[in-house]
Amino acid sequence: MPELPEVETVRRDLQELVVGNRVIAVTVSDKTVLVGDTAATFAEKLQGRRITGCDRHGKVLIVRLDDELALLAHFRMTGRMYPVATGDELSRHVRVVMELDDKRR
Image 1 (tube, rainbow, N blue to C red):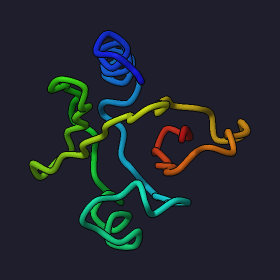
Image 2: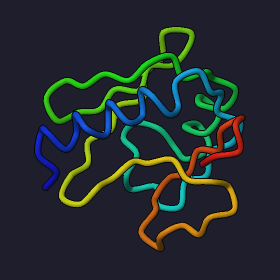
Image 3: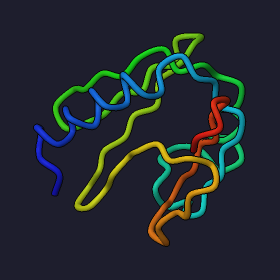
Image 4: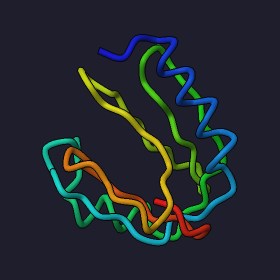
């Protein structure tokens, strides 16, 4: 299970790498990772939103979006969150992909 220092490292990395970018598309390949929304509703809520900051509360990563929305992520036992170039191959374990306006996912 990712421990608090690992979640803080992810937060710092994302703060530097994705803040200021806009989410242009969202693909959910495993809807069981979502709480409270369908895949379509989740994607609709994120599309077009700008990432304004990354915070952490305990082991929960908080990705702040414009219009005071936030994406909460808990990495459970083996979760990760990281940006990759659009052409790079993704792991078969990827559950959600957010395409950003700077050509990264």
